[in-house]
Amino acid sequence: MTRAPATPCSGAPGPGPRAAGPAAREPQAPVEQPSTAHAPRLRAMDALRLLAALSVVLFHFTAREQHRWGMAPDEAFPRLSEVTPYGYTGVHLFFVISGFVILMSAWGRSVPQFVASRVSRLYPAFWAAVLLTAALRWAWPTFETRTPGEVLANLTMLSEPFGVPAVDGVYWTLWVEIQFYAAVLLLLLVGITRRRVLLLAGAGPLVCTALALAVPDARGVLTGLPWASMFGAGMVLFVIYREGHTRGTWALVGLNTLQGVVVAVDQKAPAIDALTTGAPVWPPLLALAVVGAVGAVAAVAFVPAVRDLDLPVLTTAGALTYPLYLTHEYYGWALIQALHPALGRVTTLVVVVSVCLALAWVLHRWVERPLQRPLRRAVERALTRSGRRREEPAGKPASASPVRASVLVGAGARR
Figure 1: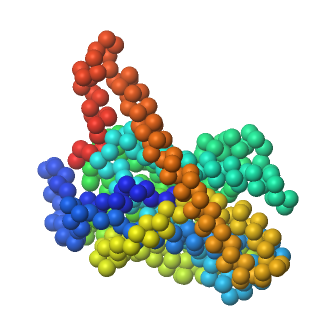
Figure 2: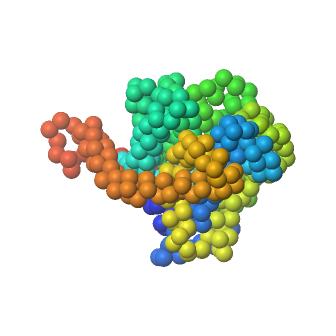
Figure 3: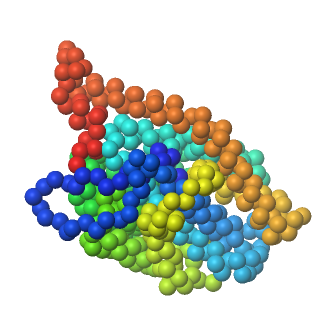
């Protein structure tokens, strides 16, 4: 999971020009769009991200098998643990949001701009979280430590494909996100158009879902295969949000959602049962939660009363999502183990979640905010200079390069 960046949510583009071409399309039914002159931030999307993160937090603290409470979670919280296993679907919600927001952030940007925005968004909090969690694992007597080499490998965010043990197991979602970013980067390289986005969001998940279901070994490295339909649903929702809807685009949202349900029932239900200690999850309810994840993003994008919420506190809530997700597990478990004998289970749970939110705010305030902008500028500058060196013939001035404009000014902006 990653937090959606402030930039793409800071403005909601209205209907743009339609893709050129001789092929006929269905007439577009207008979706009520916010004014492009005063495009509001989708603050409700920020709240939705925090809701997804908290559902995962409760899954880890009250449903996942671990004995930090001195007993199995279903014994510590017999009622709550009947519900919180479905908090796993917070990951589904994360990925639908990512499909929507990352496409929004890429449309109209150059490759250097997009890569720089992603690097600056993901790495500062991640570096801090890796180091903080590695230090805790070294200091806390009941946690297994990681070697310095493993910690350094984790700092790249590419430890999983190389088989290096993660400092924190929650990092698996970041490798899934990176695979999605690669697909969006491909779109930028060829030029983002409505037609190409819908082709990727339609055909891509079909292929990925088929591989995930038919070739289980393919999920070993290509961990994004089972999740492609969630990203695809979010991408199509953004196309509808940007340009209006057709029956075909809604059918594509439905097709991606159906694939997500099939994968959830076939693969995620057994995975949740293997991670938890209580009763098995009920597949129809799990399917409903997946549908709800897509529906929640659609509600934020298209229901005016939700879309137009203008509460600044929601933006602050959204800012906590990524650092909360990165740090909650081991720090939460350590606090649970230390506090529950004195405070009791319910009070401990409230205190631990509150402390995890406070730690997330510290990381956002003192790590993300100071580092993101200079890192983004440095990465964009380096990539732009590198592109110029590759594209310009030897001895020619920079202005003479006819190719550079298409690469650096934004192939992604062409429609």
